[in-house]
Image (cartoon, rainbow, N blue to C red; front, side, top):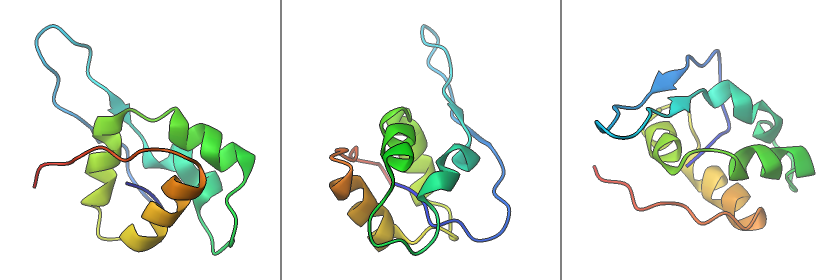
Length: 86
């Protein structure tokens, strides 16, 4: 999911499948989505749409992420969130 990030976030890496290149997950790329704006910016939506779905699942596990707000931003940006395993 995403995003209201508190503090400094570190890049996250995903494990790669043997045939696929690993996704490079860097939550800092979603900085335009942070804050308490009632309406995400076009830049936020573009950055969100460019994210690898596996990264969104990793971000959802980050305790500094407001999952409810992340879902609202994704819905506003018309980004379907992936099903993430626990």
